[in-house]
Amino acid sequence: MHNRTVFFVSDGTGITAETFGNSILAQFPGQPRHVRRPFIDGVEKAAKVVEEINTVAGKDGLRPIVFVTLVNDAVRDTLTAPDCTGLVLDMFRTFIEPLEGEFGVKSNHRVGRFADVAKSREYTERIDAINFSLAHDDGQSARNLAMADVILVGVSRSGKTPTSLYLAMQHHIKAANYPLIPEDFEREAIPSALAPYQAKCFGLTIDPDRLSQVRHERRPNSKYASLANCRWEVVEAEQMMQRARIPWLSTTHKSIEEIATTILRDIQPQRLVY
Amino acid sequence: MHNRTVFFVSDGTGITAETFGNSILAQFPGQPRHVRRPFIDGVEKAAKVVEEINTVAGKDGLRPIVFVTLVNDAVRDTLTAPDCTGLVLDMFRTFIEPLEGEFGVKSNHRVGRFADVAKSREYTERIDAINFSLAHDDGQSARNLAMADVILVGVSRSGKTPTSLYLAMQHHIKAANYPLIPEDFEREAIPSALAPYQAKCFGLTIDPDRLSQVRHERRPNSKYASLANCRWEVVEAEQMMQRARIPWLSTTHKSIEEIATTILRDIQPQRLVY
Image (cartoon, each protein chain N blue to C red):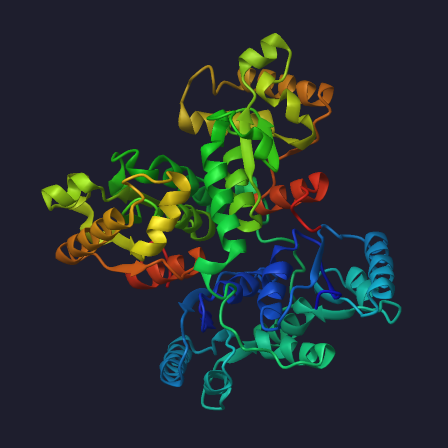
């Protein structure tokens, strides 16, 4: 696959083409070269991409794979014409046509996910969620925790911050996060700021060996990073979450996407249609 | 479409199914009800989803649309069997089979994008990028700007923070951001911390009316939010970027995805194969 090139061609950002294309390509061994061509919204631009595809095909000695998400028929036809040597996988046409039949309406061939961002309530909610998650990162503020959809808890470096930001960015969820620290373990009680909100808390835990490794990168040879301390913190945190009946999962072998999806499935925040 | 239900069924997080499904559905008017069913990795779980689909079909009086990304054949066959009343759009089978022919190998039917997160270099880079972007949000730190892939500049509330976080999360790009403030306009010079890095700066600007509206939500009736002040800041910032030859775009009508994609296309950070 090293000699193979994959194009992602879109009239928008191409993010859909790339996300989908990558999950298809992950089913095959090897890493092809990626070429992104976003904002291809006219026949002339499309013709240039075809030239590029043909040049690459000659160089590689293999025809490129071309994932396209193009709503304009003329633009799309340029890519799928016989003089384009790429193997074109047309994600829109394949699925939109059966849906037009099912819905009994023509598709509106709209480019992009948001019609006009500045006027979209959904979009404002997204930005609000990101700002909320940033302001409530790492227990920075206990104000407005009542407004949080989810509060992630766990020891330092268990994955709370990236997960909160992802929940906000992708799912428009107001995700606060709050650390569990040695002082809490000594008091044997969850932080008092969290007490009223146990029902929307979700815990992240992590394998102590992995935690120690991650902390060593941050503060080499500290007590904070030592395996003994990591083991103690993790055991204490898990016991504390169990007593407080906070559900939790281990982030050790999970991507942010997998962690976020599990949280949403288990906690079912009210704002989400699930 | 209000009476129509859409299912996203996956053996992984279902994010691919949902992202792709949403961009398909955006081609049609109306908002169907969404139901996510992630982690469907066995025939029994799949059979339960089929029951659910059939129940919903009865209630709605319309057959649900079902986007599936399932690599296991037996699980997939359960969803596509004749007793499932949904219109199943099978994203994997449609595209994987032609690719098996093209590559001359069978697909490995792997679930998820990352094989083992804890061991993946790509994944570590992603977390590093998120941490970098957080630490370099809003000019918090000028240390390590040399390590940034991109530095976003612009007036307060022009969209720098969400864009930096998105670049890190989605593209593993170390994106710092640095505000342009009235003091810079009075001195008529870009912040000195940025001077050595002009080549990797990218500017965000915004329509002054929109900016004023956004700032009023934050600090109502302040000078900061006044239309006169917003107009002045925006004009000054654009002139400053022009003098410093920093490319920029207006975020007023753009989603985070569109802004990020334009930046990557124009600035072509070295770490990205573009």
